[in-house]
Length: 95
Length: 102
Image (cartoon, chains in turn blue, purple):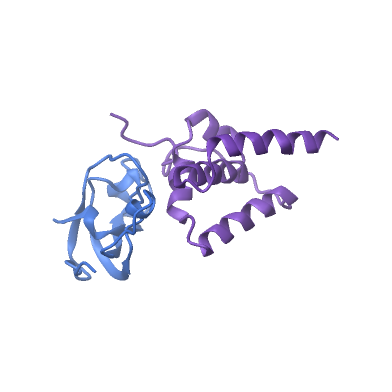
């Protein structure tokens, strides 16, 4: 199991990467900065499971909160609106 | 370099959602059951199912129904794992097709 690097409230940047294969980090948040909302647990890495390997060591999975206006340039709702996305630790860097 | 995979369409404009009720066809229930059984048996993961759905060419991804994608991905996964061979699958498909024409 990989240790959790981030605590709730920490600012994180999502890696701007475009690998082949099965990826669970949605395109629309790659490269953006958000805040750790909570640690959801640790799980086998789905990117590895998709390639018929065991996905170990388990990776921490976080719920990361982004401001809607940071995600969508033309967002017209409240500046306080957020979107939360579950992202594995190996996709996150300290911001 | 392909940046956004075709399936990864979160945030793209899609128009209104059509809300309709529908029942499942028998073959769709069978496909669902097969996937669950293979997962319980350790012969595939949901992530492989996703990978092979996401690998569909864009026109096929858009044209195929939910369980058409599943059954295509299921076959691809079993071929990749060596559970069945391409030749076995091809022969069986001919056999099943004949059965359906009786």
